[in-house]
Image (tube, rainbow, N blue to C red):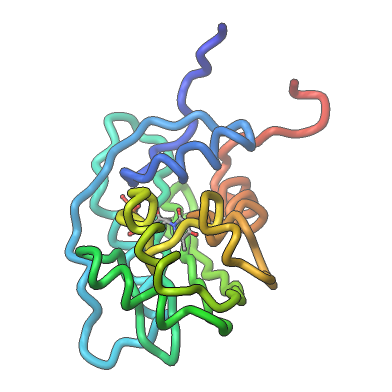
Length: 197
Ligand SMILES: Cc1cn([C@H]2C[C@H](O)[C@@H](COP(=O)(O)OP(=O)(O)OP(=O)(O)O)O2)c(=O)[nH]c1=O
């Protein structure tokens, strides 16, 4: 097996973001950073995810001078930003809020590199069917929702709750690959292309 040299510093502890980048041929070196993710008073959701993505990209101290990517995903319903649930009770409250209706998932990406900081924010509409209370309790016990914004993972067991999505599936999982490719190319990061594999 060939192990490719990293072409990007990923300022994230999320295994999903790393796997999504690997899926488009971008090997990374990981520099997770611990920043305060509390929303500011009256902060709008787009401003919030954008601020955190930039803060993550700035907080990482890459060992090399590779471009650095930070990202943040939030689930938004009725203007309320849902982060990761702290416990079963909060997880259940989140899924009850999302049950039988549409919500938004916002993912911001920031890439620092030769052109300075470039960023974008992608909004995806997700519609869930009604989720029964016993399903919510059983879902929490699987362990899947605990480290996910909004308390669910579209790429996992929660796919059975998702009736429709309009937007970017990869953005809901943690990184909008179409838009991220554009930012990375502008910063000179090589991406998979025809003939390179
Ligand atoms: C809605 C949803 C979120 N998520 C994940 C994506 C993100 O990893 C996480 C949201 O939390 P984030 O704070 O965006 O990311 P993170 O804490 O996992 O990683 P880091 O801050 O170090 O970059 O929820 C899914 O995996 N599937 C989903 O369907």
